[in-house]
Length: 298
Image (cartoon, rainbow, N blue to C red):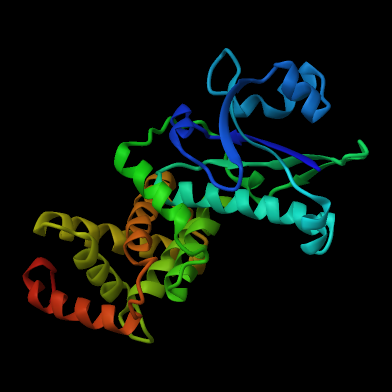
C-alpha cells in the first residue's frame, strides 16, 4: 500500500528545511497554488488560497509543508488493528516532532489539519483529512531562525524517549505546550501553574518563594537574578488579579514570551534526567539563603 500525507505549516520558517525528520516525514518548500497541492487537497487555486493564505511566508505564496510518502504492506497495517489506527499513529508521529521543535525553538509552529491518501495494490483509495487541535494557535508569521545548537538539540530530542522519562518534567512540558492553544489570559494562568509545579510544594507566601527560587535557578548574574525575581512576581500578580478580580493582563505577549523561554530551559535541562522535585527545591532553598542580599525585605 502506498501512503502519502501532507500538512501545511503555519508560523513556519525556511530553516525548517535543515531538520532531518523521523518516521518518513520531510519538510518541503512549496508554493500555495502549485498543481501537486491542488490535486492532493482536492481544491481549486482560490479555495486553497482562501484556506491557507495565513500560512504563506511571502507575497509569492511560499509555504512550508511536512510530507511523507512510503509503502507499507497491508499485513503491517492489520497488525496495528485497523486502517484508522494506522492513520492515527501517523498523526501521532508527526505531532510529536512538531511539538519538540516548538519546545526547542522560540516559535508557534503548528498545522491545522492532517491530509492523507492510502492507495492499495488494487488501486483502492482511502482519502481523509483530520483537523488538529493546534488550529487554535494564533496564525502570526513571526520570523524565526534555527541555529546550529538548536538544530543539534532538535535532532537529539527526536531520539530520546517521548513522553520524557521524568514524569514530573513531562507534566510541566504538557502545561507549557498546552499554553499555545489558549488565549493570552488562560495561557498566563497555565504557565504560572507550570512554574508552581516546579518550584513550590504546599507552602505559604507562594509568590515570594516562587519568584526567588525561579530567579536563582534561571539567573546567571546578580542583575539577572533580580530581574527574573521582579518579573516573576509581576506575572504572578497579574495572574492573581485576572483570576480574582477579572483585571485584564497588560503586555501579555511579552509576559508569555518571558515565561515560555524560562520553562523551555527547565524542560530541556531535565527531560532526560531522574531529578526529583523535592531535591531541586531543597537545593534552591539553600541557594536563596546564600543570596538574601539580592532580595528586598528578607
